[in-house]
Image 1 (cartoon, rainbow, N blue to C red):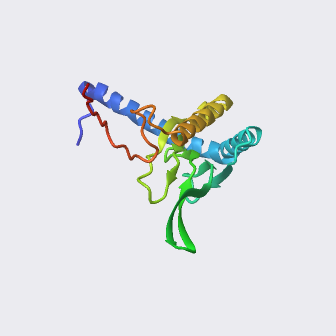
Image 2 (cartoon, helix red, strand yellow):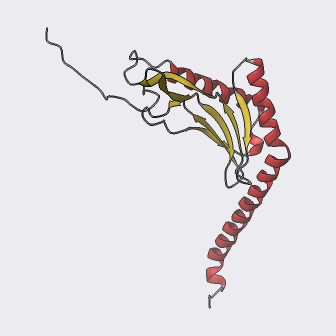
Length: 188
């Protein structure tokens, strides 16, 4: 039996405060999920579709709803032939597929929204870079200007991936195949 006499009162009050915070967090998760269902999912989809149309971006916006309360809105630049292929014989070429990248708004387990950039990658050619996290937001924090900034960051990162060259030696190649710092000393 726990002794809850006056000399343990401060510890008990501290515990009660923590329980109150826990209950508030749990309540917030339920509320965030409801906001996603009732309006946020449609708002994100609509804003992304509007930007795609007004900026003339070849992209699709889809809702992935394989798991309840872990849904995602995905703006994808699609998949294409990479332009790289292996000739099997004179009549057959095996093309490598390039995934052009995507911008993702996904519910987390606690109802908050994580915004991610999936970088382009070419199948069977190195390893894809891990997704870049732009941020994690409570539903009420996602205001319209954020979506434009997210799209700008996405387009900038995708453009940098596509424009990779050796002008910037520290710049990582889009599929994590760097050859390290190759310092070669030159003799005069």
